[in-house]
Length: 140
Image (cartoon, rainbow, N blue to C red; front, side, top):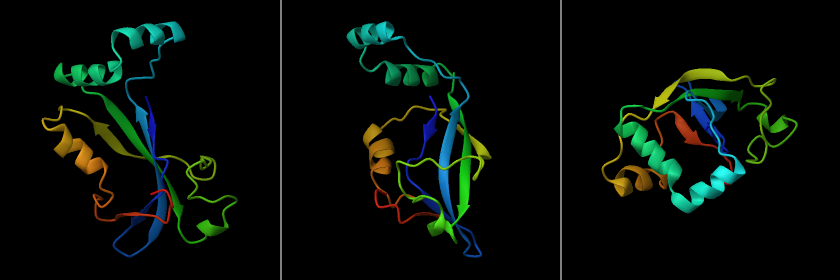
C-alpha cells in the first residue's frame, strides 16, 4: 500500500531557507487488496496477515520498497494559501505543489528488538534528521 504523511514538516537548508513538506511513499510492489469476502476469511485465519506477510517477504529476500516523493511549499506566504496548509485533513493539490522524487525506501531486514528499534523511535518526535523540523502543525 501507499503511505502518506498527514503531518506537515519543515525542511531548513544550510542558508536557513524554510519549506513546508508533505511525504508520499508510493509502493513499488503495486496495490493489492482483498475482496470483502476474502477479508472476512483472513480475519478468521490470521488477524495479523499484513504483518506476517511483511516479515515473511523480508525474511525470504523479497524486500518491499517504496518510491519516496515530497510536495514542497515555501513557508513564506503559506499562511495566505486558500486553506490551512497545516490542517491534517487537507490534501495539497499536486497541480499547485507537484510531487518531487527524492529516492527509495527499502525494508531489507527485520528488527531484532521491536521495542527498541520501532516503538521507541516512532513515539519520540525528537528523532528527526538535522534539517527536518516539526512545523507548527498542532497535531504534530
